[in-house]
Image (cartoon, rainbow, N blue to C red):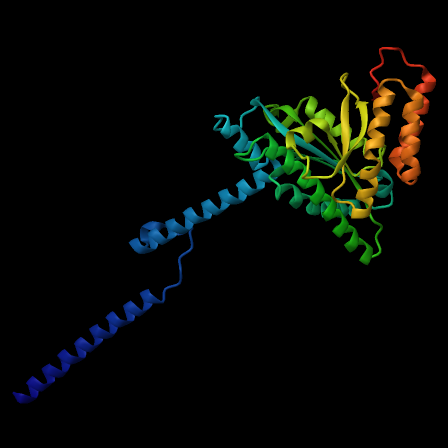
Length: 360
């Protein structure tokens, strides 16, 4: 009897050991089971795994949306969307238009055509991308954004968030000065690898613009149009004519209230293409070495008086002022330009109602 009882106890213990082993093995398998791929049915997963998979899917979609948004911003600047939102538009639909005042900046590489002819297509693209990469930061750091790349040219807008018109104008001037610093550093790097230096011209104007979207059903683009854009573009194109790096309009300077903040001098009284009313154009000097700034500022009053005499058609007085400036600073190409222009205009015998503006 005792033997049978002992046998029964042994059998029960063996059975319990088998059950405990089975449970332990099952738990171990579940804890070490590899993650299931998304293509398997979620119905076969424990509830905790379903939640984890959903979270991963949502996170993946969120990351994808962020990547698409970042890509979209490369084609349509975020500032455009923010601008429309500020004016009550919740979407970027075709045909949207708003009117605002802002500073427009154009920047262009001098002698780009000749430079590009010496490069292969791939070298040209590498050069442009390297150049644009360096020009981007000075604009963004001064509350501006690039609207378009036009060949080698850059068109940038300055619409200071929560700022006034003075802030917008000052931002544009600061950006132009920072662009000059960036190009100097770029040329230093180019010289170390045997590449020639490049130069840029900048033109800036301030005024009203129409900002909106244009295009068709399957192709839309943002744009800024108006007289302000044309003047900024024309100013940039006059940079080599007046041998200046940064050209700005009187309207920009008046808006920025720059007296005492920046160094500048009057360049001319001109009529740009596409416009009937003349404008005063100025040169910003702060990026130049102090001694060159001083030379230009020294003869600035004489140039201004010479231009005023030319407007009055007082040719002898105008030439006298320009020659006096030439004696003080014989290498200043602006003086040489005015001496030539004054002689040329005088020879044409303009009418008595001529406004004194040079057509450019």
